[in-house]
Length: 149
Image (cartoon, rainbow, N blue to C red; front, side):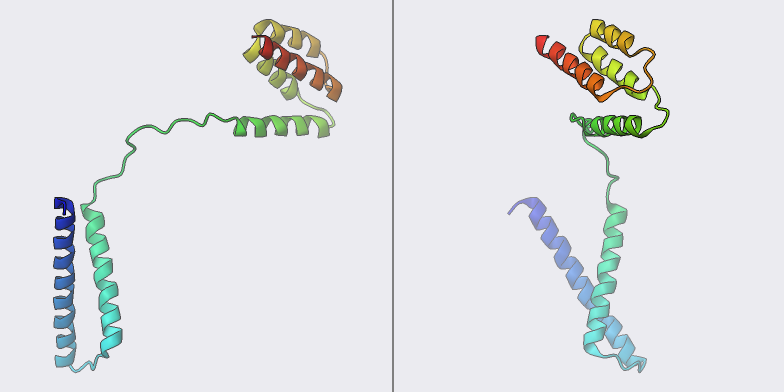
């Protein structure tokens, strides 16, 4: 048995013993004061009160929690894909679409190839509503440039 387990068993045996003594003294006091306690409800009440007391004592003694190592940022693109989908849906449904989709396509092309980004920027300049065929063609070019590199 390791020293930690012995310490815990000593600690818990002391707590259980102390709790039984306190509950017995409380029960004797209620009998002496003629409160006429019922044994089973009194035992349940004593267990609940002692458990709550020991939880509070353990919480006060505990060290503050902290991260041992920083949480790494997620490597997937779930949030970015959701944002892309929202931008695309907004572009398709808007009466007067913004240039958010064009900017996102240029940014995506820039992350793959700066030359392609300037070509995409020039192609999308002046277009308010980008047709689905143009979006598909640009995305295909971006993917092809990624495969070449």
